[in-house]
Length: 407
Image (cartoon, rainbow, N blue to C red; front, side, top):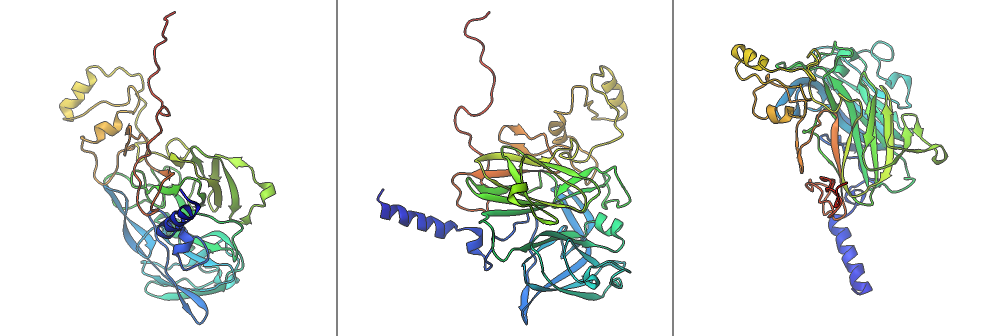
């Protein structure tokens, strides 16, 4: 291929595919909030104006499970607010909850009276009223916003979101920039509301208030420099593990980490109140991204179920079936068969099997706080799921061959 033709082909590919930054109106790579949205704004007399409405919503955690939660602009987490260091922002907040509220801009440097703490820095926003917050952005990095009025209930029901401030000039180009808010919930089977009074015994663990198999994959080209921003305003810490890559923690909720202070990781702990930004160069494949606490990449489980591993249930299953037709004993050999049984056994209303989702090699034995980083060498769009990765021949684990000469 001639040099001229090669250059023309490269230009055509760039124009048809482009970078996220090139397709946007801003001089930065816009943040992608999987299963989420970005809050629109308009410029009024040099100030970026945003509008938030906090209200009760019906939210789908995954197909087959919905709950009445509290969120902003019809979703939880609320839409991601994006701006640039040096901007002045004006945010109108309308309260459609049955009680007063306020919005705290978590991690932002701003005037005390704009900090959003009911009773301390402002009067609470009564139901039906709209308050306005206005302040300059004197920093860059990953911050959050959340209720600071009856926060046990309001945050516990989903009133939270990201506030991302881009630097005036990026230190290096980022091809893909994602934001994932980790959280935990208590939603009993056959109910329609999370219980905000639960302190530790959670059974639903989410990325952006979705559980696998309802989580969107993170779609990336091989060789892209990827940033993932994690935020946590929940109750528990979450060690988030990425398969197939090493990354560096490049920023915390306090700001950028100097290059001399970074080290390689494969797991980053995100504690309540913290944000952590990681960066890496993507390698082709399908790679799991999940919390590494063993029960967090699982969907609702019965915490009071007795341990029946190794228990001989011969005859017992028939006796129970006389009282409970259709009963099937599980757990004697582990729970691998659970997704298969859940596919054809009726369960309680409005809940999910603890594992689910079909992969290219069968049932994926995961749920909860789990998603997939899909990296492809040849990708024409970031906006569509590329399907499952086609591994090169000879690179998939399989049955061991018997030795040629038996010993």
